[in-house]
Image 1 (cartoon, rainbow, N blue to C red):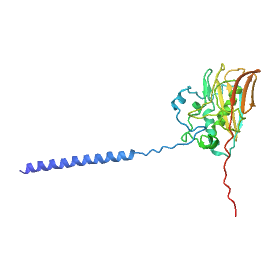
Image 2: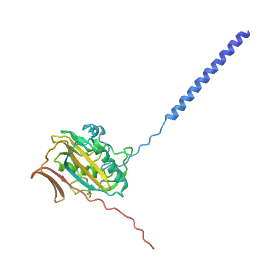
Image 3: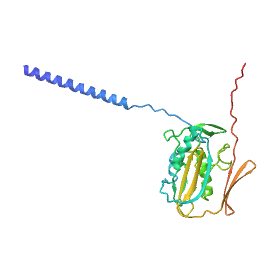
Length: 274
């Protein structure tokens, strides 16, 4: 009888132990689930030029092949250079300019390939190091992520013009800007507007882009000694339209048209003293 009671008691103890393990496992699983549960907050911030985000970003990422960097100094022939100036006291805009420059400097454009500003610089995000600065929205300048990089794209555009490269995609701002002559800018926006040009020469090209102490310069070098001819870039005004023409050896081979609105006047509040 004692043996039977002992056997029953052992069985009860084992069952209780198994139940305890099961409950502990359940508690552990719940705890781990609670630890890994996170709350995601979706935020929206303005980017340069356009607030619409309906454009498929995959298309932006796959339109052009990735271009590599090369700094071995084997591109000794200078084809062109262009310089613009920025206000270093505008710290967030300066950060954006230098961020874009870092991604552009030493990019190689093989002969026959297309340079894409968006593909090379990438999406303007907080994680990519971009800050809020003034961008165009409608008929006014507002704070937006990546403000200032259009000055970089415009500087590259002007250098590409002077190297007699084939401009394949360029658009002007909707509002008047001041860092290049009106009609000479090239605006960009990640999901709607790119600036692109083709290396239509017989040699590989190298971009050298530098921003320092308020001076932004883009210089284009060639791997082989080639001639781009005598290049002249001229902007004239026809009514409300700015007409940019590039001529090489006296013959016009590129023309683009630009129209701008004036920015909406900034409203200020004045407090009268008694």
